[in-house]
Length: 305
Image (cartoon, rainbow, N blue to C red; front, side, top):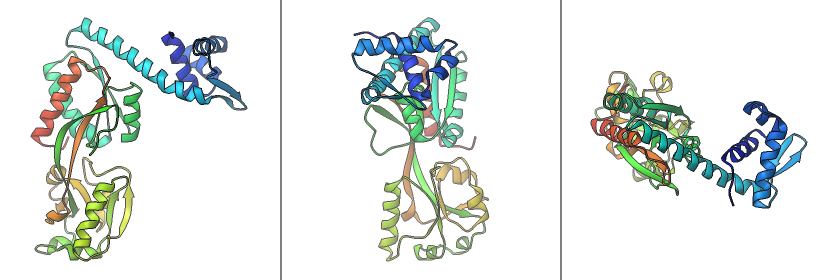
């Protein structure tokens, strides 16, 4: 069984756009060209991949399963093409890296600055998105590496290279009433609300245990954010209110004078950042140098861009 890469790419576009005409227009061809590609795939696998509906076409149950395989085949093909390009270019070449807004500024950009001193001919494609979106882009072969907050457990089909380890620390704005206490106690925090991230059950459980150990209820959370706590600067919310939040300690240190770290080490939380990649993804010499630059930046401390 063999598939034409072009047919698979057209199938992926149809699955994404839901209409043959849109795919044809995007690829500069006609509906018949796209339809013929789908028929060739269906003939090869012996199963129907698409069904027509009132608003276009949609995947059959088998088509949904085939979609995942098609992504893998196309990703492997792109890896092969890029490997051959790298061989022809020597150490120069192209690699694609994704990150959140915070990891882009804190880690990726400083690492690229180091890399381009050593490999001035290398070319990099950058993408920013949420952690969930970047993991999906990795699986589909759209990026080669994603720089993300470190995960306690590496998801299947990924490898995780730790590039920075540190702490999240509770911070308040300079001049906050808590900063006038010398030192503040955990019980003093009961009068104030928090900004906390969503989707971080480990942090929340550790947080709960600290307050429970002091005989206190879980504190009031005024704002829950999907942005996470690995940010490159204080938010206006924390600078203009009495809300308490978490921040990476190296970043908080940079902004001393705007925020102050609460010296309650029981509330400090370990955290880090990692380079995530596909286990079966292409790892070029330039990408290897880039990850080495990330590790060097992490070892030197996360700094303000």
